[in-house]
Length: 177
Image (cartoon, rainbow, N blue to C red; front, side, top):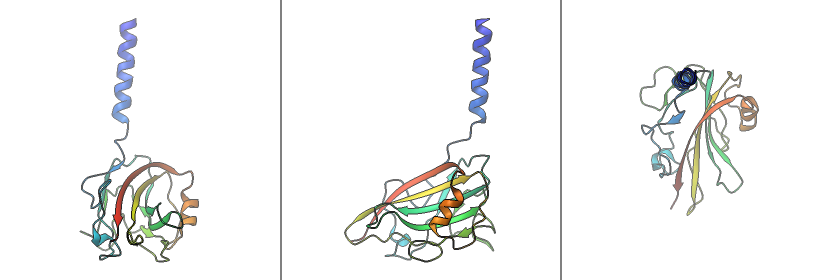
């Protein structure tokens, strides 16, 4: 009896492990790396284009992905550099290479308004002499948002509240000299 119980528990644990989603995370194929300085071309001191981001392990229940880039070290509090929402959960990377008629993530992908007051990406641009941390967060949502293009951070936060299934997070740095 004891052997049958141990065998049943072992099979149950193995089945649970097999059905568990892989770790939701950014991969080393991304153009930014944890704890490392962000390349100048992705900042206000360069061409101010977004870096390539590559991820894996999107939860199966995700209906949409959303991307946030923020600077928690900004003098006035957390500063939003980038909001993207409406990404298909089948999307596994974001980057300029290979774009066709639609941006990565599909035709429904929309950009929000950053704290520079512009729609789209605004790269790192800390005060001279200060190193800031930049947090890239990819959110797996359990429902699709209905946000229009150009939504601000408050509307974005309200739309995703209580709908985040999982989060991939990458923190990199940048300092202006």
